[in-house]
Length: 291
Image 1 (cartoon, rainbow, N blue to C red):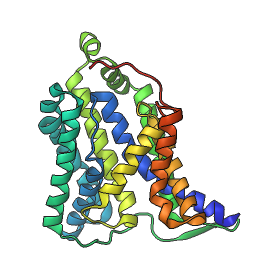
Image 2: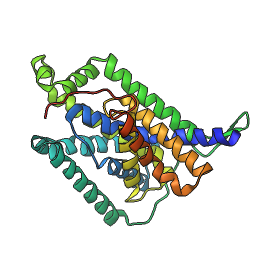
Image 3: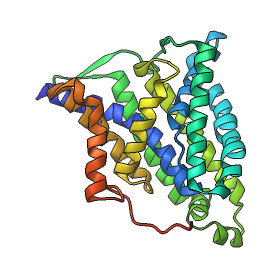
């Protein structure tokens, strides 16, 4: 039983990282109708950015905050202005293809710049292990889980309880009506992209010590995050957390008690089950969108 709890807690920590990336999918979809298949690479690039700053002598925390600024500019404002804004008028599919192309470019560019080898990355929470009634929990798992929970519920409070958050939701629900009400639609949309970039940077800080910094580290993470968003409900940020944790825990249980060979197939199996029996996701609601 002790082993079971350890596996579950470790899975929740991994799943919470999936959830942070999945939040990016749900936010961009709700605010701009964008499905960003470069989400995994949006996590990979900040990891290398932090390594680059650390190679210049900056400590990890300072590197993280510098990366936040760079990511907000490049992955937030730059992505919106150069990819999303010009492509939105052509519909969802061309935008999806554009983000897939962007992911390939980012991956190849990183491989050329940093090489194909996996680079170690420091763990911000350290490597201490705590003992709770025989259940051993690493500081990394505990810290990751707490940070993800705080971020997800903090984002919920921001969206529901603040003027800016409500304005962002109004833009997501009906852009024309939001403009009539005097809401600065362009600014609210940029805020969404900036939050997505910040979430990706935070996910990079948490996940890279486990995955190591490598040009293709975003492939699996992006896929798991996308599946987590669908499983939880694409239009519900709490659903992203639920979907991520379900995938993380299920993967760990399957890898420990069945076979590690089935570990990566668990997310796809859960995805198929949810699509068959609850197409809107576990917490998602049916919505009508203009085409």
